[in-house]
Length: 558
Image (cartoon, rainbow, N blue to C red; front, side):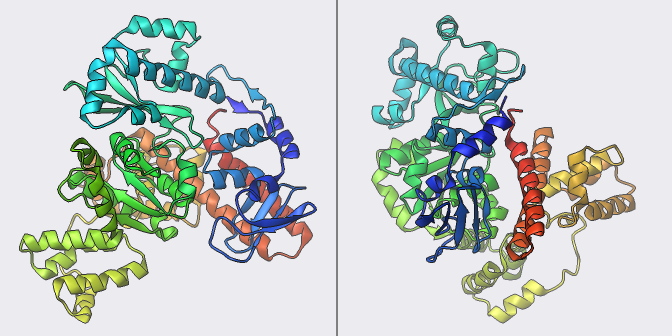
């Protein structure tokens, strides 16, 4: 189900981009044109032009630009359809939705999801079947105010009561499946679990996570992905997170739902956590919109350390030079542990002692290996994998840290780092310098071999910037030289990554989007320097077409 194209174009005639720009940043409107300080990069002199007659904006500094919908998407951190709906709400404009037999309108799903959340919350607060759940939450230190603020809920085993509620509110099995309460077989996804509603950027409920209070099944169960909810792009947040983040200089990233609730009880209103996944580029990209320091508060265990290492390798971290710090929970597992022990007041001390991400990881690695009595040259060798995740400037800075920690002259250290490997390991990964999405994509292309590929895959392979067709050709030649190994053995030996079909589709989507972004950026640069009116019109037309393709990627209501 999607918003009709006609409706989107008519809304554009009603709305004014100046209404959104001037409430987001400082600027002046003269007639239908204006200049403003760009909210997408730091500057003191206005360099962003905008026009109400065409509802377009363009920054001459950072080259960000586009139409009214693009501006609202970027400034609010919304998907395309959500941005359209927010603009429509501002002008009391009635959108028209194109119907589909397969999907329920997104707006209708959100209304039903919010209704279910209210029901589950009432069950938790007052039903007899939730007595143990309430006791459990109290034992974890969660008070009534926090439970109500986060709208925590409960699904027990009283199926009859739930069926009656659904009937009285016209909630069908199809509704419940597309909201993520039922699985595809029509069975309840969560039973005997405390529910944690997951909010979108406008504080509507888009999904759920569940926590068992028994020893049966997994401790946490994350709801399935739906039309409303995609884990790689959704975060569990404090209610009204966006507004709070605009007025704070730090955003705290935790591992789990209860951690975020605990942080809110302490007074932190800019706490977030991924929903059963690792932190992704999309997550960081959204958080980075607020120009804040990002503070990682992962669990004090090996899993938390590995999660921190994965953040180091996220492309967006280097592309935007993000300021990322790390909190160490010395003496505690996490902030939830501090809450349970009624010792939340100690959290500020850990925040005051936070370390830079790169400094923390390299210090941790070096000190761990020194305790294991590993030789210095071997430690330097083992740090190479981490160093490959750094920007050139970070590499230079970390050399000084390694030199100090290992008490090695900087010149000797650089010679050791640059020394060619005399006996390269036979199992060196062929694609060790390729990002995760490219690795998954190339692996799948090897599996498909000469099978007919879809349009998107060929588009990705043909892109000159990524050069993946050349890399695939090289991999095939390497594969042929290892004829003694069958394909599964080859992939297991030279690819240190596993994935399922949904993760391949995600990788393909991200690469497709990356190419579109690159093409959009290139055309925007051309638009900046061209002086020919006809050429400008042609470039604008091409830009509009590319942006439509990008919008279509996530406009999954079609």
